[in-house]
Image (cartoon, rainbow, N blue to C red):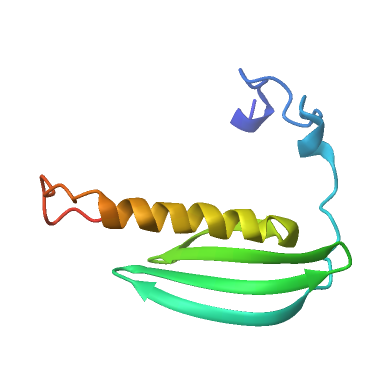
Length: 109
């Protein structure tokens, strides 16, 4: 018997995944118009802010790139004012609270 003809201890791998999300076909691409893009470099991280619009509305996409690894968040346009307010509060707190000396100064985020 050839090794790949033996039954797998993990069962039949040709079955449907129990979670329905994994069994759906990929969503078709949605046309997006870019209204504005800004890029900033902070230490070893690059942040790209893209204001975009698609048939569902406007949104802000923030992408963080660290050495080729990317993470993205999307904020729908109706939430941008709330996002700005929270960011302003964080800036105020950061300016008011003294910074603690790092335990390991070579350690980055």
